[in-house]
Each structure stands twice: as C-alpha cells, then as structure tokens.
Length: 368
Image 1: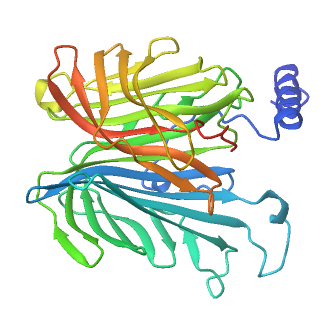
Image 2: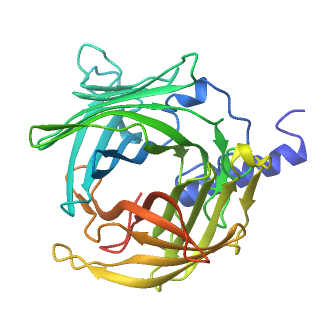
C-alpha cells in the first residue's frame, strides 16, 4: 500500500495537521519490548524513570524518591557540534524523615550531547542505565529477578539502594499505551514495577541508617511527545503498594477550576490471591475528593494532603504521613510540586497500603 492510498493519505494529513497544531506527533499504540524499553527513547520529547518507596531502620520510618528526567532539545538535533546539547538530563531526590517530620531534597541537571568525552550525563537506549554526575540508576538481571541499583550523593543526604522485582512488569493503559487526555497526542508509553523489595542505606547529615528488609518501592517509566491537554494545570497521582501484594495506581489531570479533564489508573490483585489480573480504569471511573488541606509557608500553595479516592477497585482514603513534603525544583525542571509518603485505608478504615502521592499545578500551572 503506497502513500497515495486514500486511507494512508488521510492519516498522513491528519498527523501532519496535529504536528503543526501541537508540535507533537501522536504516539500509536504498540507492544513494549524488554529489555529495550527499559532504556531511553531519545526520539521522544519527554521521559522519566521514577522510584518511590518506604523502608525502616529500627524505629525510624523513611520515605524516598528518585526521579531521572530526559528532555530532547528540538533546536539542537541537526547540529554537528560536539558541544550541542541534544538531550538534557534532570534528577530529583528526596528523603522523608517521618520521626522528625522533615523532608530533605536535592536536584541535578546536565546536558547530554552524545559525546562520552564531554558529557556529564547519559541515558542508555539498551536498558535502564542513567548517569548524572554522581547520581545513577541502573538495572541488571539476576536469578532473583530484575535488580535496580541507585546511588545519590546529595548535599545533606545519600542514598545507596537496591530494588529487586518480586512481580512482573505492570503495563499501564492499553498494554503500555496510556491515554492522558481527549486528544490523540495526549498519551504516553507507560509501565510500572510495583512491590519492589528494598535494601541498602540512607544517610542523613553523616548518620548512616541501614534499612530493614521490610520496605517496598514502586518504579514508573513513562515517555511521551505531549502529555498535557492545553487546559490542564497539573495532576494528582498515587502509586500504592498494598500490604497483601496488590498494586493500585490512580490519577486525574485537572483544569484551572479543579475539575478532572482526564482520569485513569489500574489495580493488580496480589498473585497469592489467585486473582492476579489487572483491572485498567477507564475515563470517568476515578474520582479524587479533597478532605484536608495544608498550605505551604514557602510557596503558599494549598495542597490536599488527605483524599477520598473512588475507584473500580473500591473506595479508599489517602493520608500523607507528613504534611510538608513540597519540593522546589525551579533550578531544574522549573516546577514546585508536592510529592510524599502516604498511607492508604480502605472503606472500613483499615490500613491496607503505603506508597506515594504526587500533586502538581497547585503552586502554578505546570508546563511540559
């Protein structure tokens, strides 16, 4: 079939029109392939690898998050200079010290030109292997399953963590193609690895805390050409590991009035229940209702730190363990947002899970 065929011609005109209108190509549904799709996708505009989790050291409970972002610089793609910044690599890291109700966070940014002799950052296309100076995230195969190693040397804290997969990859949306809005361009390729086992250490102001073997983590990897609807100001998202081995994802994208432009998520039952199927939530099936708010003294943003969450998997209550988990990333990605360790309760008030809540667009509309 040639491009002169009417169906292909119409599709070509449609895609060309969308490109000129939005500056982004729609991402077609496709099958993800591993280990290739563990790696970077430099032909796509925006990408991130995101690990959140919790672990204890004796009586101390800690939350942690590490995110690497890759952003393609369109204006430099045709440049031949070795100095041209073809990609930018950003990273955020944070630790929540629940006992002292304190959030520690740091950020990094560096260019990636593709020249190994010049770059301080790179992201491999073959597998998860991201380096940003002295911050790293790498994946390896082992008999026990996929193992991710993370190293972070920040100003007031250090992370030396390993995460071992205990469950298969969870493909979000339609087999890894996740809608984020009503337009064809508003979609991403997206998979998760919930229920990661955690070991390693967290060091705060020179004091090392060896972690117990009771923690769990969640990894998201997502890449997209144009994620947000033009009317979207931000999103609310949770990734929660339930104590029985299940995994709950839920999100909504908000407009400036606080109404949902799009929503979705998934629930995968624990393998040991014999019901290890995945329920993908459709638009209109998820609702976030704020219950209690906290105003940041730094940004004056007013964040809901407790939510009632309605999903096809049930009615839940989400509650932040520490109110002040706001991150100021204006030195890297340019945004102020809230991201923090939170607990999940079922409709009977039972504590059933723990994970992370992320809220963007409350301190100003998010731009991606």
